[in-house]
Image (tube, rainbow, N blue to C red; front, side, top):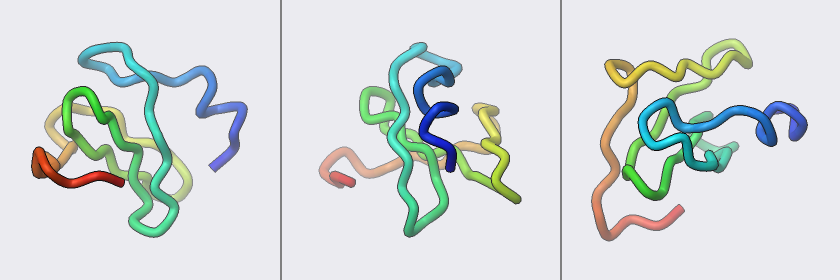
Length: 59
C-alpha cells in the first residue's frame, strides 16, 4: 500500500484516518471499529464490505 495514498484517503463514515494492516490486507478505522478490505491493491471503502472489529481488539 502506497503511503501517499494512506495520507489522502479517509474512513467514508467518520472521515478519520485509516491504518493499514499489512498482514490482513485491511484498512482499519479505530474510531468506528471497522476493517475495510484491500483487494488487488485497491481499497474497498464501502460500508457494506467492511467487517466490524471487536471493541477490545487492537491492531
